[in-house]
Length: 82
Image 1 (cartoon, helix red, strand yellow):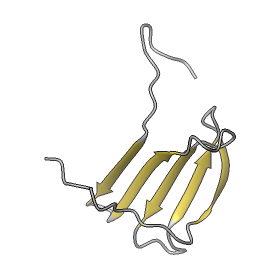
Image 2 (cartoon, rainbow, N blue to C red):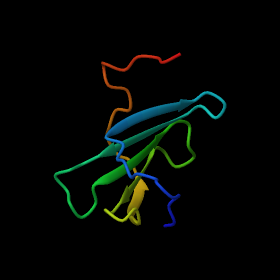
Image 3 (cartoon, rainbow, N blue to C red):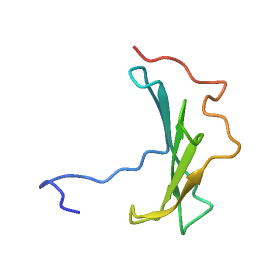
């Protein structure tokens, strides 16, 4: 992937984004215990085939994708940012 001159790489440890227009919630998180596929994207909402999970390897390439069978998208500490 091409980077801008002087750009730095960073890792999102955990982020939850609620898209009010679509009614979907996106959760990005890392799983450092799994070195082969440390990055997870979970999509929650009124999806035709249920909630989804996409797992990426350390290079950012998709390794797995499928339905998310059991998980919660809103931890108890979440608060709205204005």
